[in-house]
Image (tube, rainbow, N blue to C red):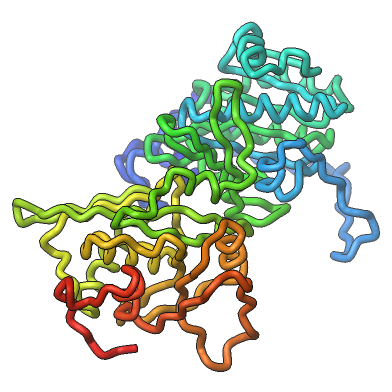
Length: 475
């Protein structure tokens, strides 16, 4: 009998190597090679001949007559929003997040809501015992929810048990890293085990028609642990984000075959579990003080949802001559670019200051439309003059200091008007642009062409000369 040989598999791309190396030659990632035992080859290099009894597959046209499968709403509106309207039968959802962020709490609440709606839900945990799940359910007030609980890690036992529940609407596996396939010679949580267990569970979901939700661990960098192919195998990938010291939690859709990506659901962590936040803009701005310099309100967009958040900036003299740049919730590279544009195009003296930038509320902002709000906060902090508390900002800034239009301006303006703001600063519309911009009647639109225009507007009419601003004459 042939002897099993060791091989090394990259957890990022799945490439196989005969020996360990610090860097994967296929994808270039470091410290991603993990050892596993290869299955012995057949003696003499024999290959398995194809069986003659194979069935031919049937090809059909793109336009079908069968109606699309109905979605299963979880009755948690923020969760359904990120999913695209609810769970799709036979779909697979992967939920990842930092330890203790609330992944198991969210899925237990969603499972209980579906159970109370009359759906059959199976909750399988490989990390907690039945008594521990019941304790958490009692704390969340879910003890009366009709759920079927199990604590198991052996994949074969789970698959055989699932076959006896043909009416199951949802199966939750918490977590995929704890599953153990008997025929795979590696430890639970390894690349091979995670890949094999996920494949068998996904095949069972597609065959039996139940929705499958998998909880996934994350690495210290915040990426989903396990092979990268796991994210390609599933239909939906959700990231549960937030600071454990903060009450807000953001459920973000990274991949969705049945809906829009980059949708977010906002939750608040309370003593009774996760509570939905129907109007996150009002909550993010609840503690805002409009009479403080270095603060500006950004009219952002997360997926199809407009969200207003406060951008905070603080400038402190750099005593050692080497200024520090600290950013929370925004791209540090984009801040460096924006500081360079403000110095070069507007003449602002920022090189002698430590710059601290924060997106209040724990939200992570990634769109370029935040450039204008960040610039307004920096100018306000430098001049020590508060921005107009009734004004919101949005727009992209180019390297020459010009302001560029961003998508979905009308949604941003409507959200600002709904929350009582009276003004909005945005890039100047180009002549001959696409259509007329519908501005709410209670909102005044201030259009800016260049970053130098912002120097006066951001601080309520204070002239740039008061802070040593060099006017460039551009408009």
